[in-house]
Length: 397
Image 1: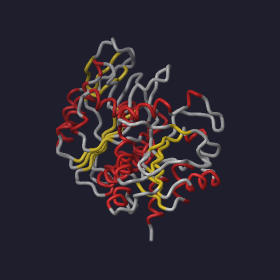
Image 2: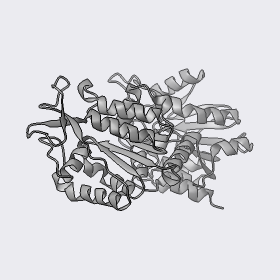
Image 3: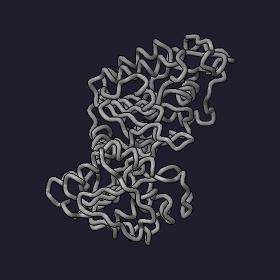
Image 4: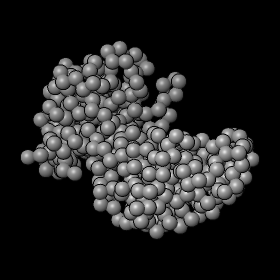
């Protein structure tokens, strides 16, 4: 995808003395007291900021945090804890400015954080007047928030339309490159793992991938629906019987291409959904009417692991069982370690997937971990994200 890269502008000496507006994703989790409980997104935003400062820019950075009401700022909406944590990580003061849309005082070599952008009226609906005011603050707009790339808002899309220069920051550019490598130019076989509670929430993803991948591994409640579609009984497991025709269509689409949706041959069941429930391994043909399927069985997990180790490219979204319960984590753990041990280019995204990666300590063995949940899913659906579209358009001669 042809976009202007901020790293190139810096390398070409086009940033010195310029006002640079960075839209980052600093939407970090906080406890009830407002303390940040996990700072990955802040850490991920710092390379772009350091790049701008090193190039001699006057740097402004903003983000949304939580779900504030536009036009009604409350203390709980403030980026103050974020500015403080960023200052600690960067070893410098990070001043926080409120009411900044009308103008910002910042000099080359300085860094300021602009208060929660979603408090501005018109942000979510991409109000043109607001977008133009934001664009007037800078010489260069840098989109470095993949987590918001699927939204066309004033601070993500509108400003990119009207800024003198609009470009992709290093984090966004890395996401673009990883997605292109995994989906547009994949090394074969291309294997996708799509898991979750409902087929309905990921139906468009499944349909889109069915035309691209060599193998489509389904897990969780999605796998239960596919088992039903294959004529197997699933007891009282979570499933969507009304979507059996859709599941069959995906299976048929894959089969027509000589590809496959592997159906579990064994499963791990319980009588109740609880961490202390007794886990029973059963053949997929022996599920009782009062059984809950909470994981794939060891035979299925081993078979899938062997296939993953032979893959050229792996796209992973979702754990294949209730991995939060130790008795039902074997499937997800086996899959996770198989991906880690594979020589394939692997890209993973989605909150539960990242939690599984952290649990099994394989962060360094995944080729690329996507920072955006909703944006990652929309890419898998085959959609062109608003951020990619506008940055590509602005890069056109």
